[in-house]
Image (cartoon, rainbow, N blue to C red; front, side):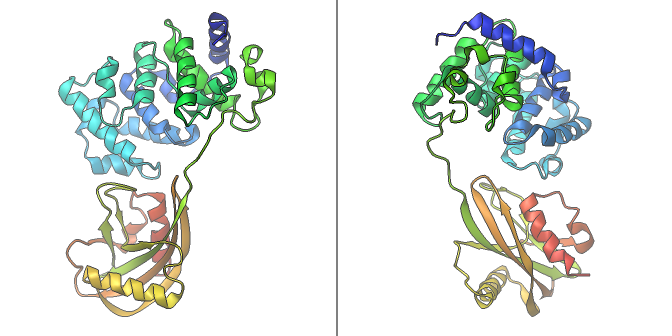
Length: 358
């Protein structure tokens, strides 16, 4: 690697201890709370995660509190944070810890890494911060910092590039302060070694950075291929029965697994090229659900929502149903619909469906 390891460690740790942000999960050595923060911070901005973390800790101050909670309550507190499998896996994992380890988060990498939803990064981050285990934690920020520091020119989303970054991380992590070190690398990536316009002049590692020396900070790390966002068209039905909206439950696996939403059809762009085609398709869906429509379908509007790999393009309609709700549909009173804890993409359709109902 060719870096003066001790000098690099000292420079970055001194910078971190002077410049680190005062974040709520940095004020504790409780492995459960550190674990919770790491799960929330995956795919989530720090400023967004803070309020969710504080609400979770207020409601579930200990691992046993979270383990004893119903999953529905956990998902309700998680609503809006996205990537709901994180919450499901965390809930399953803390229940396993409560049952198998008497509520003590295991300090052994093999045991902790075997829990639901816990991968190599989470294992290294939690155990280094909570227990002082000298494990290198490589997230997106760390990957970027080390690719630039070591001049890794191979794509970091391919085996050779990942291995080069991981080898550098393993060589640099100190035995005496691994938690601070891992957080320091993350903090450097968040505050200084940013994806665009890195502030090299303020970097404590500039003296040893290959990218700064070569002028390649703006092009590193190299990413060979990113997953394209797939557009999906959705026809959404706001079915009103006895002053309530009818909901269906999404499949137990996949996007927004197990969440309740308005009945919908999905298809590739262009499947329904006209209002008539959309209404015909929706009437077919309503017939399959056993809903007897009273009157016409009324168009409420269009909305869109983008996930990491899918973009929903949605037309929302409403209609009135005759008779009681068919089996398998859940009725929610109109005055409670907008208060439901649910995903943002679903919430957008609820607003459109409700806003014209007076």
